[in-house]
Amino acid sequence: MGKQSRLTNEGLVAIPDDVREKLGLRPGDLVAFEQIDGTIHVVKGAEVEQPSFDDRLQRARALAVPFPLGMTTDEYMSMIREPLPPHRA
Image 1 (cartoon, rainbow, N blue to C red):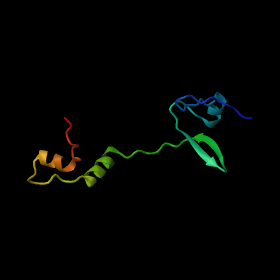
Image 2: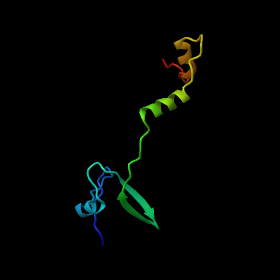
Image 3: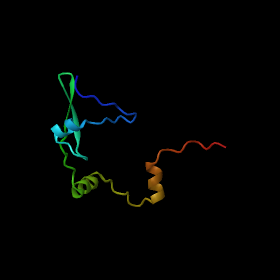
Image 4: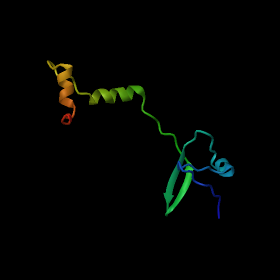
């Protein structure tokens, strides 16, 4: 049998020193879990490039809906909010 490590209540598990060394893992590295032929393998993860601030801002602008002209803020908020439940005394 290979190495074993106990799972914590939080779902965490310690990777043994020699396994971390073989995988070249350092604190903060990503770890990936791959299923191959019904067996789960632990491998060193690849960093996924995050979109830049400008890219995220451009996407937000593309999705933005303009504020209707002639409508007050209160009217707009009333329009987009869910109806309030009946008041209970």
